[in-house]
Image (cartoon, rainbow, N blue to C red; front, side):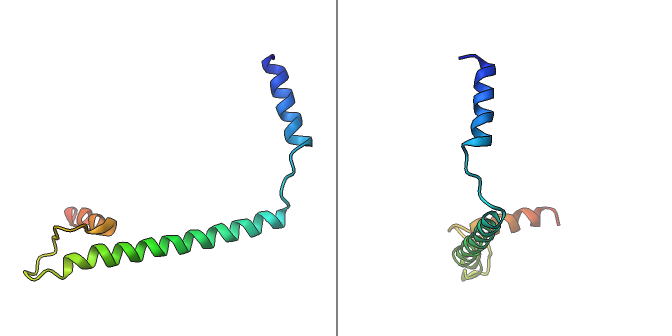
Length: 84
């Protein structure tokens, strides 16, 4: 098959054989994806905060460095402290 024929057939298929969603379906899908992304990001944030940051702040000797996992936010805050 020649490349020109392939491109022509692919273009024809996209125009005439593909069923594209309506504008309303796209908007509804975008809202669902945005809400699901927000919920998942909040769940990850709270899990990271609860199991990461708070572990370091509860050490008996008062240090904030924990041998346990500090979470993504813990490493982010540690990175910011370098530039203070």
